[in-house]
Every structure is written in C-alpha cells, then in structure tokens.
Amino acid sequence: MRYDTMTQEGQAGAWQVFAYPFRIFFLSLALLAVAAMPLWLAVITGHLQPPLALPALYWHQHEMLFAFLYAGVAGFLLTAVCVWTGTERLHGGWLLGLWLVWLAGRVLMAAGESAPTWLVFGVNLAFLPLVMVDAGWRIWHSRQLRQMVILLVLGLLWMMQLGFLLQPGGPYAAVALVATMLLMLIIGGRITPAFSLAWLRNRGGTIEGIRTVPALEVSLVAGMVSVAASVLLEYAHGIMFSALVTGLLVLVRILLWRGWRVVREPLLWILHLSLLWVPLSLWLLAGSAAGWWHGTVWIHAAGVGAMGGLMLGVMSRVALGHTGRPLQLATAMVVAFIAVQGAAAVRVAAGLGALPWQAGLVLSTLFWVVAYGIFLVCYTRILVTPRVDGKPG
Image (cartoon, rainbow, N blue to C red):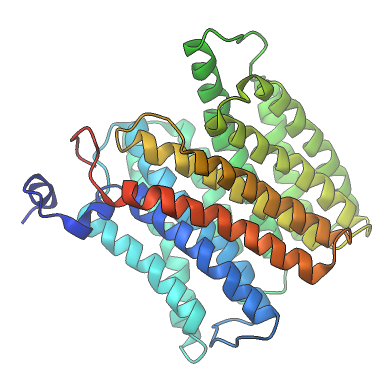
C-alpha cells in the first residue's frame, strides 16, 4: 500500500513521523540532546561505565558534534531543499531507512565496545553522504547551483568526521566545529535577515539599514576557511589572526541585520542571539591559541551557544510552519531559549574558571536538558500528528 494512501485513509499512525524529514529528525535530535548530556555527566563523574565504542571523551565529542548536528542538517536541509527546488519530499520507507542508519550509528557508538571497528565506523560514516546524495540530486536537477556551497561544507564535515574516527586526538573535531560555524553562517545568513525583514514589514516596523554586503559575505567565507586551515595545521599565529579578524567580520554582518528591532519576537531574537556566539567563539579560539585559557572554552561557546541555540530556534519555527500552524511560539519555549543560552554561558564561565568546574558542568547540563526537554513537551505532538491544514507532510 502506498504511504500517501495510508495517510489519506487515516491508517498512518506512527508513520506520521516519516511524512517529512523534519519530523523524525527534529524529534530524534531533541531526544539525543536530552539523553546524551546526562549520560556524559554520569560517565565523566564515574557513576556509569557504558560499553562505548570510543573512549568516553571522544564518544562525547562525536555524538554532540556529528550525531547531533547531522540530525539537524537532515531535518532542515531535506525539508528546505524540497521547497527550494519544488521537488517531492523524502518520506515513507526511504525516510525510515535513512533514519535507521542514523539510529544504528547511535546504538553502535553507545554500546559497540565489542563490535567490529569497521562496522561502527562504516555505519556512522554512511549517514551524511546519503543526505548529501538526496539533497544534491534535487539541487543539481533544479539547476540551483547556489545551494552547492552547502554541500561543499558538508563534504568538509564528512572528511573531518573520517579523520576524527581514524585519529580521535587530532585537530579534526575542532576543524569540524569551525565548518559547522560556517554552515550556520551560510544558512543563518539567509534565513535570519529574511525572516526579520518579513516580520518588520508585516508590522510596519523600520526596515531601513537592514542589509547584506556582498563583499562582506565573500570575505567572511574566506575568513572561516582560513580559520579552518589554521586549526587543521595547528598553526597558532594563523589561528589567532584569522579568528580575530573573521570574528570582527561576523559581528559587523550580524549588526547590519539590526536584530534589536525584532526583540519582541522570540522566534527571531533566538536566531540573532545564537549567531552572536559565533564571533565570540572565534575570539575565544584566538585566546586559546594564545594560551590564555583552555581550548574547550571556545568549543562549548560554539557547540552549546551557537549550534545548540540555533538548532532550537530553527526547529521551533520549521515545525510550526511546515505543519500548517501559525508562527506563534508557546510561552514555555521562551524559557527553553533562555535556558539554552544559560547552558552556554555557564559552561563557558566554568571553562574560564569563573565557576567551579563540576558545579558548572552540572548546572550547564541541567539548563541544556531543560531547554530540549521543553521542546519535546511542546513539539512532540506537533511532530507526530498530521498537518492541521490537511495537506500532505
């Protein structure tokens, strides 16, 4: 029986989460966020010793970067690319198969201590190329070559994942995080000013001065590539210079969007605020290269503040818009947005020595779990039930 027929007959049931990529992957990302951090806290404090496929620190790095990020990429990109290209969405059995690859990777990483290395690595390395093939086919056939830059960044991420699995102690995770910030700047640079302008126009707000500068966009990408190359080569002076300059370029770009004008709309200010962690992360990276503080400080600023905050903001908006609901955020989600920013601030403060390390880790984990736990409470029903307007997806 065809999936669409099942939906029309009201027999889809649990299949509804496979009606569109954002449904299953946003739900899975939030569940991973809520489960993985407390598990990491239990492991690092010695209360639990699960049969992880990698040493505990490397497991944590892999799951909170590649697994968490890839779920977000799949949910957003495979949904957005259908809109960009006007193609039929990935759904049903094909989407189920893709998700099972992602899920198998999580199971193998968490319980694959005795599993063959080739199996653990192979399954985890298979997921992103499958996402890229689906998105790339649609982009290529619609001749929207402008979108290819996203695939290039994803290709870099995949190569860094490969390097990380083969040599976990190398610079690959750090380079992958820089590439992640570049991806956030590309996608965030498209949706954040566009959504803000639309909101202001609808309410008669001031739109003068909100703009993008093409030369700045090109310089910013070049700067991020320079940062990534310097981190890969572990060239301290190159990291300091490129990160300082690129951070300034990113800040100027964000300020040109005049984010303070949309402060009354949480679905918008969370995007602006989360992206502000990118220049801060770059400056913290420069400071770590200079030896002023520990190298994990910038990692948590980028991973928790920028990536964690942006993911939460984008998922909250996409899940409403693509299920036919008005863009009206539940009050509890404002608490979630504040909590994820609090998680980043506390974790960075602990890394800088402003808070006791273990207390900071526990409090940051609590904020993080609260943020994504609220998302699950507010959005699970939305993600597992049909669109309110009766349209497919």
